[in-house]
Length: 252
Ligand code: MF3
Ligand code: CO
Image 1 (cartoon, helix red, strand yellow):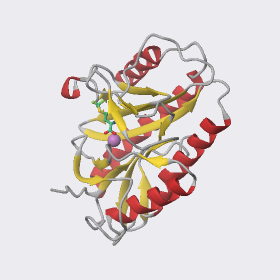
Image 2 (cartoon, protein in one colour):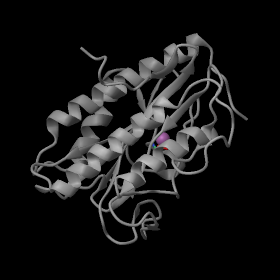
Image 3 (tube, helix red, strand yellow):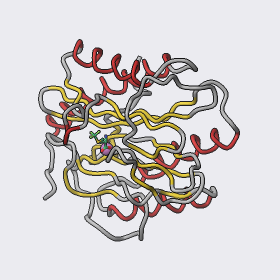
Image 4 (spheres, rainbow, N blue to C red):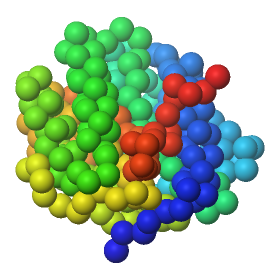
């Protein structure tokens, strides 16, 4: 069942989204060779608590951290760890913020020091694929229109789109209906209606799209060991078009 949100509820989710966007801007300043994803996770947990927010991922289905930190061939749900980031790594940091019971979800990929040309292109294409999807998040379109636009763009750039993890509705709960795949046929799936709030969160692989699950039961990585990147926003479907609740551009 899809839960439609009122404008007031979307405003509440935007508060969470804007705090989340601020956290990503802070992380961007911290990222460098030598810092660990564990330090970043500690910072995020503190920052959210200081600003009256709950790190929603911590304790979710037994997950232990405020953030997911997925390095290089890790697709998603990487555990923050004390081993420092190295020059040339790419890392996706993902988190869900809860203020007064309303959630927002956003992941962002970061370059650590100097990265390869291929890694840089992967980051650019993955970010652009998110915005290609957002453009299709308009009333009257279907979920499949978002899915198809993202897949077509990613594959036209010579990369592959992950199938095993998808975007989702979000509100008072992290994962609501509908599912939002980043691949598939246009004109299929639920129709987008005013007041729906969804995440779009393409995970793009440099090589093959298949994933394998780590022995930790959480972390997915690429089957061929090649790089993977992710960007994610929380999007409200409105009469005025898609509103990016986790937008970093609007921040002063
Ligand atoms: N933020 C993730 C998503 O996009 C959820 C991470 S799973 C968790 O759905 F357990 F870490 F929370
Ligand atoms: Co999500």
